[in-house]
Length: 510
Ligand SMILES: NC(=O)C1=CN([C@@H]2O[C@H](COP(=O)(O)OP(=O)(O)OC[C@H]3O[C@@H](n4cnc5c(N)ncnc54)[C@H](OP(=O)(O)O)[C@@H]3O)[C@@H](O)[C@H]2O)[C@@H](O)CC1
Ligand SMILES: Nc1ncnc2c1ncn2[C@@H]1O[C@H](COP(=O)(O)OP(=O)(O)O)[C@@H](O)[C@H]1O
Ligand SMILES: [K+]
Image 1 (cartoon, protein in one colour):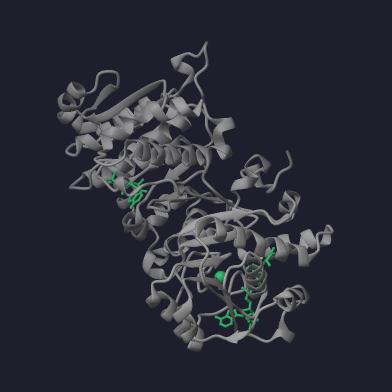
Image 2 (cartoon, protein in one colour; image 1 turned 180 degrees about the vertical axis):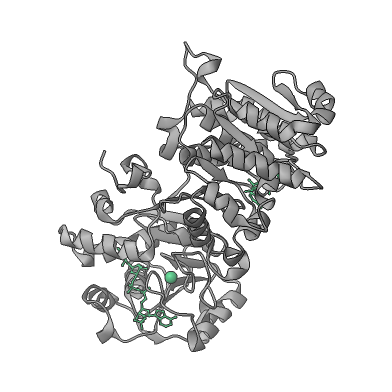
């Protein structure tokens, strides 16, 4: 099993199906395949054929308008047009470009097209029942304007189904962001491997159904591409997953320490239960003495430890001296009122000072919003930050959603700047490591947008780290399981259900 990337080998060949290629990396893969002896003409033929087959599988025979652009995406369009024509589909081809400026393989395929050529025109939509968007793919270099923009707007207005070749035109395959107008598709067929832009929002909504088709590029071209990004999948982390051992002992499955606040007592309890459920051997909750009865009454198998009010900071520090607590969670329900914020910051800094693996969520992040640097200076490589966009913007204001940067770059930069693993939540959660690796999660349903779901996630992560998974993979595994449980449960989900329904998903993981 050769490594695709060298740095810590986070993404290796066992998960090569799940790596994501930027359009630049895809072009390099293409060049390398040609260098290894696969003719560029054949790659384009295979690409076009794959799209034509996907179209014939999805739609009944109907008049098609193929819009072919000036580059190789347009070249694919000519192949698709000819393939469909050979299967007796009525095909109209509209070309925007100059044949002489096209690659040799695109010119050859264009010349093999047996039908008529039309200039791009909105009137061509009148007779079409399906549109193939082969205008721009990986080579999109600037926003779409002028006549093409009007054409794409007319396509959108027509309500006709659209099949996009590689990426919907106007979508940046690297970032998922729109460069001006985008041709929204019902089906997108991409080649060899997915691109980040297919998975990140808003890109994912532009793609419709996404199919990946091999076109003859051998997987070994991935070896030298310095790939840093993958789509989350158990193949990435299952071999490191702490499945139960027959002769296992609870002391071998770690001990999670969770910091509980005075008022929002539910949040840390959700984390505690989640850490238990995912297999942590022991879980303790350190809580203010005054709230101890509330916590203790509700927790049976979790050990609830009171922190005396007059010396709670010292008491938490003392607790950290016990090396059996191998992961600490701070943030869910921790509190920011009055002296709480100071206490939370102290707990975080003490935890980091003693090098303990930790998951910092919610209030533990917001507590540092006035001076994030104080947090970043203390962070070590077993620290996981789990912000939603709001918390993220408080720590990294220059990287907020409003910064105009894409989510993948924002999470990666945050990980680099803070030195922590950063899990940036949302429907397209990104997990980024300071060394540049990143995983995009795609299985989370909208049902997860419910209070407390993040507290459960913090507990899942901690529970897996406690059992010995590396923080990056533990985070990826927890996020995937979180999404999977929500999918299995379906509508009506509340945070408690995530923990209660986890066993069904764990059962399938074995
Ligand atoms: N890699 C592979 O393995 C394989 C790749 N294949 C296919 O090749 C595709 C990539 O091809 P590609 O590199 O030729 O780029 P493509 O997207 O056709 O566009 C480039 C042209 O568009 C122009 N242009 C850009 N933006 C514009 C704008 N806003 N408005 C107007 N013009 C604009 C740009 O002009 P320029 O920027 O140079 O001025 C240039 O002329 C890929 O997506 C896949 O479908 C397959 O055949 C099989 C193997
Ligand atoms: N629309 C959505 N689709 C999928 N997952 C979502 C969506 N909205 C939120 N989530 C997920 O739900 C969880 C919410 O966490 P968080 O915002 O911390 O909530 P809380 O603080 O209430 O626990 C995160 O894992 C996030 O990625
Ligand atoms: K396209």
